[in-house]
Image (cartoon, rainbow, N blue to C red; front, side):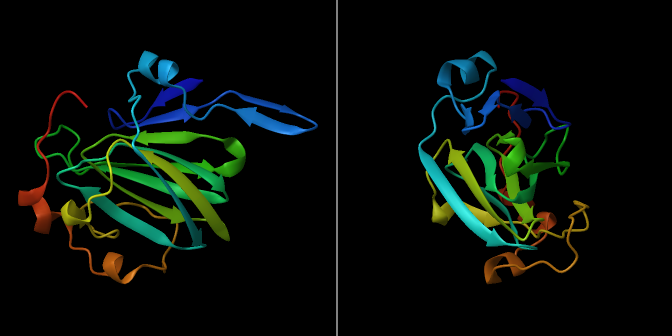
Amino acid sequence: MRVVETVLPGVVVIEPRVFSDVRGFFLETFRADTFQQYGLPTTFVQDNHSRSVGNTVRGLHLQLQRMQGKLVRAIEGEVFDVAVDVRRGSPTFAKWVGVRLRAEEFKLVYIPPGFAHGFCVVSDGAQVEYKCTDIYDPGSEIGIAWNDPELGIVWPVTTPILSPRDTSNPPLVAVLDRLPSYETKL
């Protein structure tokens, strides 16, 4: 396994070793001792799986109390996965990084707690699976507008398909007082 840092400290791309032959392929997508070696979390408590049609944008989402780290991978199709640092006081506050996750490349991205997360489906359809470090807590979830001009995320879609909730998410400035504070330990 290879771990590649991104421009946002703590957000990393994981490139697992893939063994392929005429039968197909095999890879480890998570192994606690290897994750620990790279300083990544080794305890995940919830697995999620979504399927979306092309041009769908999901996000930007985060939880305020039960903050989640997410280990994300595309198992079908391709997505543009986005992490935004929303920790007040962070040197990279309001900065974002986008990673293309293609099922056939097997890459994963880890997004630490304190980051908003979203993705855009750039293929005809995609299935995404992600492991979470804490459980879903709808009472502490908030959203941030996917197209907030202050964030300036360059999405690979101009007319996305959005849920009613994601259509009405406020800009970052409207939720500033609710966001988590920066902590040096991710």
